[in-house]
Image (cartoon, rainbow, N blue to C red):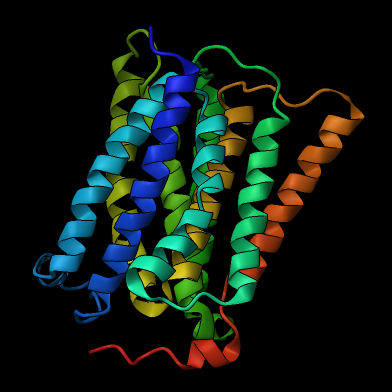
Length: 292
């Protein structure tokens, strides 16, 4: 019988592989023309022609399989906390393998975000089993709230407030889409057969949100630096799925005033991390112009 510990170990490996894959895809995205929503096939062909992006896609597929396996063995809140806690490996890989510059504030942001989500995991009570059971109304309400958030952010994309931060905004949208797909995947990993009227929408949600997330992620990677875009996607996706663990799948919260205070502090650390991730103005202006 697969254990929760095995699921967590798979999540650790998947976190490192996922960060490596994202860095490879970021390098590939920088060498091709900007993706165009009106020309999806041409954009896909140009991305597939990039060896960097193709390698990243392959590693990302393997990391995704590990993620699904981890979700089938362990609660979603623990799996996502482990994934987010591995965010520090993003900066290490970026510097050691790709020679990327990581600002001190970004190191701090990754440490704060990873520490916050790790603290959240440590303050959760002891959990047995995968916690895959859910109420239909709960998952519909949660996915509906994510959908409203995604629509609202998408409508605000052209607003003048986001002109200089569209890469970061796309990263947040991609993270929310990944979260919506992840919650549906978690629901599909439960024991016992789901009725067709639940199974079909969940599979559709995984495919649709997964495809849109990939497209949005590429747009984000092309418009921003590796650390802030990948880091923001990871933080948003992980935080949303940890919340779904409590609200949808019944993962227990800490008991007592101390535990609740520590969990509140953990969420504050995550919020602070998201604010610190974007580069300084000087570093942002130093980004190399993209091919049209």
